[in-house]
Picture 1 (cartoon, rainbow, N blue to C red):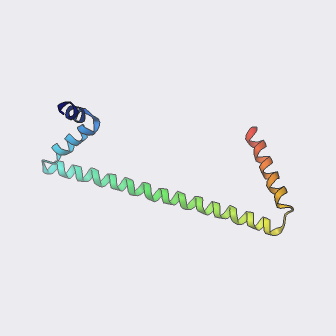
Picture 2 (picture 1 turned 180 degrees about the horizontal axis):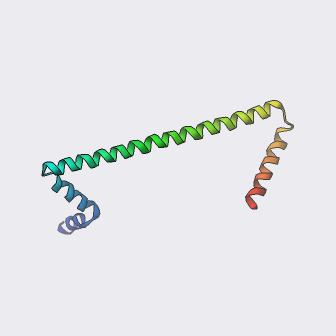
Picture 3 (picture 1 turned 135 degrees about the vertical axis):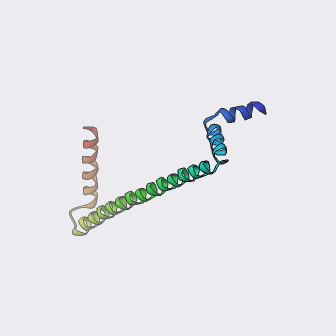
Length: 97
């Protein structure tokens, strides 16, 4: 049991816990911990907002591409299967080059 406790205390997580517990004993320490926690929340909030913006951009671009494909199909630009084979064939050639 003592060995397990020693491993925890000497691990990075254990050292962080010791610093937090020690810092929480003084008013300055509690203020510093609150400031650090607040900054971590701000960073998480920013990352979430930026992630949402990126997802929205991808959705919009995908929607635009689907609309273009539907419009091309509606115009009747030849045989659909021939178009798909042609597109897949050119994609394979580009990938191998």
